Image 1 (cartoon, rainbow, N blue to C red):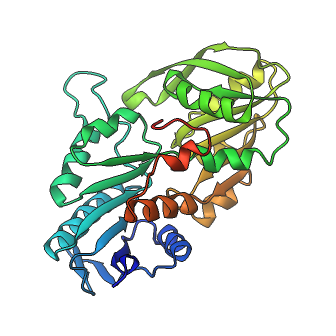
Image 2: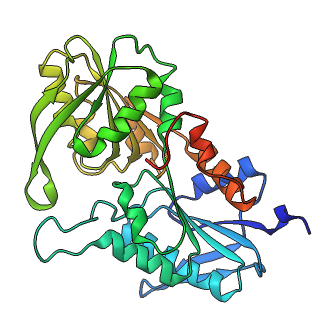
Length: 325
């Protein structure tokens, strides 16, 4: 039996569309598995084919409903481990709880570490994720953790735009390193913003300072996730300073709450996200400026390289992006 026959792809219920894209690129069918929810809301998993000794990849972002999708992933890992899978890789394009990576005040959990422990205990031998909120989350794992970036996907799209007067903008100190990579690859100047968060969970955002000349330039604001749409504060501040309407380039388009209305303001030219989480048609209709790029080719390449024991970092080095981000 060839090594390709030992590759098995499975998906949970969080994002089967993305899993199907990956399977089509790899030329490997999605495995047979039955997932259902009992009347008391418990999750049940039944693998419907033999996976003994197989190299299994489970594709499941832990997006909304986060707790249900996370628990489903853990139960799937346990089922595959007990069914004697050779190696289990959890492909988690969007890592839920990543923003709870530290204690910002007293008596808080570090939930990103707890999730890492849950995945490991459930049976994962390796985890693959895209654009973690902070790269240090890799250190929460005692198993191999492949930290990918959607920068190559987004950069290739931005290269198709008229960016002669553009400037890359880091919305805060945490995105500075990633923004510098975009600026280096696209050969554009860079500006930095300083913001302050307040309120429960840091929901309220105040822009305090813009470092760099953005007047009459088109900002490209780089970030890892759009959830409630607080990034609109940075776009407004740039617009008031004399910048043109901004591109917003973000990996994870969670898009909840008021973000659907905020992102249609005149200070925003286009919102670029990837499909690490599902983006239903109703959200696409509500945000006409939304451009959704597929992360499937990147994930398919990485899955193939892992299966064939080839380098993962080489995928990014070829794009002149240092690894890890």
